[in-house]
Length: 80
Image (cartoon, rainbow, N blue to C red; front, side):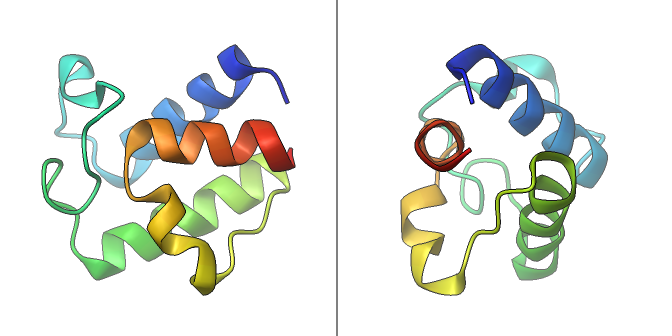
């Protein structure tokens, strides 16, 4: 998966899970749980949404690697 495609998939998934977030909140270094204030259920819904839309499954052991917007994008680029 290309970087631009991965970034679009991540932004779309975040908008579905947290529709109140502003686009400028989705900067690359933004931490999903702390900065974007996603609780554990929101984070799990995000991971499921990403898996459904991209076909890339993110196992629990890889959650630290996808803790930021850029981390999630990079994960998809490397595995998608």
